[in-house]
Length: 144
Image (cartoon, rainbow, N blue to C red; front, side, top):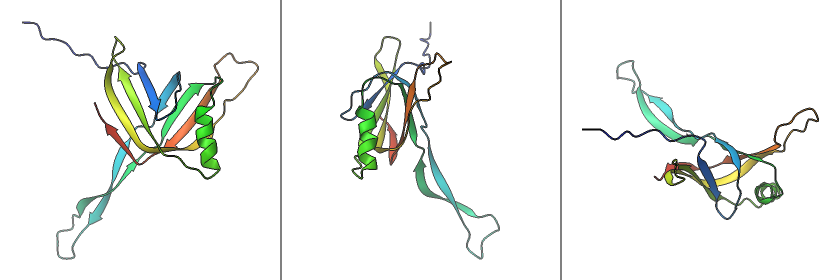
């Protein structure tokens, strides 16, 4: 009896959806992480080993990288934040299988841009010009 093999998904097959913004061609999405602070506590009459209690949940910033095109949607998002109009959005990262079907999704909750980096230009290089947008957020959920 043959057992059906399940291969891991490829890291280069994905798409990104930013609520209300259509942007294609992200070359990289990075920074997915979550951690809990550890709070050590010990009553005065207990053994010398402290108890370890969960503290604040923290999430790393997500970085989006894409090749420069004529689309200004993501730049306008951070531009409005710089002007004091912070708009929080849900960002969804979707992993795709070999047939292009959605197989795993992560939702980034209450995301807003906190840093933008324009591309470096160099007359001796032949690389694609890349823009970066760093997103602060308040939570990450794997929904599929």
